[in-house]
Length: 209
Ligand SMILES: [Zn+2]
Image (cartoon, rainbow, N blue to C red):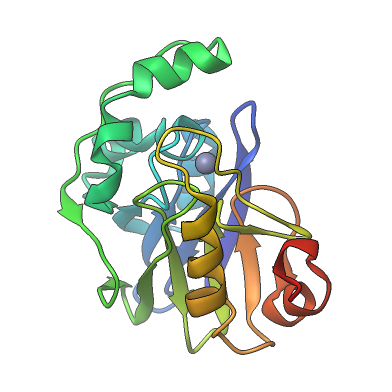
């Protein structure tokens, strides 16, 4: 598996470019900004982007999706519970003092149980509401890897004080779905360093009984 993690935009969102080494088909997860850098990684590995997957509709994760779609022709996948947030990209931009990005339309809604494929690579969609109503994580079972969006960070969890956020929901998502994964699972959060499910189970202050 090819995997490049690129920290994009002023909030340094972890954008993942994940490709199948034999077919050269790829998915890009959370192209929030800096699409030129994302395309450099795509070209470096001679990949064809088949899917643009968004973990949730915050501007730092979704802001560059339409630009990337224009360049690659790939569809944009997002959970439909975040549609209201997606319609507020201009408002979100004003919170951050940024210029509003191009509007984003969902091409395919994704929900728990769905599979997202690129070549032989398959990610299981896990709906993990709490940070936003439509937040999802992507689990690559054979690779023992979770792309966690802003649901889980090394030593922390996603904030729940923004519109659509719910502390009760994020705790339920974490305990029922995320911590159900094996300890060895590598976790790539939406921001900051990688971790594992085992390390977070043991030491994350928000996840202690
Ligand atoms: Zn977020």
